Structure formats: C-alpha cells, structure tokens
Image 1 (tube, rainbow, N blue to C red):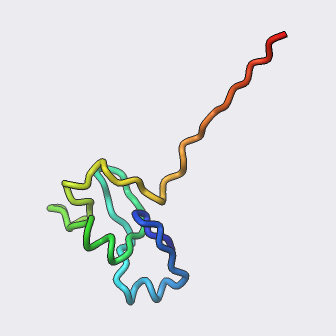
Image 2: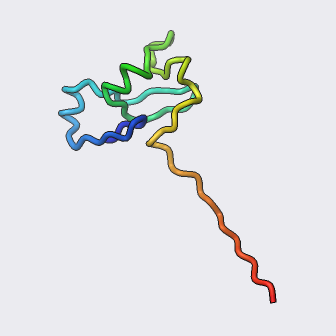
Length: 80
C-alpha cells in the first residue's frame, strides 16, 4: 500500500488497518487511494455526506502520488 499524498509505503494490509490508514478519499469528484494516518490528520476531514475528503484549504494544492504521470511527447525534426 502506498499513501496517495506522501508516497509512504506499507507492505501489510493488517498493519495499515491497525495504524488507521484511510482506504479512500475524495477531492471534489476525484477518488484517491490510501492515505496514511499522518496525512489523514493534516489534510483530510469527514464531509457533510459522510465521505472522507480533502480539507477546503488544501483543495487543488496537493500533488498526488497515486496519479499516473502525464505523458510527454518529444518530436524531432531532421533538416537536410
């Protein structure tokens, strides 16, 4: 398991449950994976709908570790 916010990794699901990892959370409509207890305490809260979500002051400011990197394209030109 890997924290979607800080990238900390944990090998055991049992350990994660014992330590209080959050299995999923939302920023707006976007669902993210696991969050470690440290990141959960700082960045997350329970929303009005009961879902765990990013605190308002951090929305749009976090670079998530669970997102796939954007593809970069390189194009070369050969001139003769």
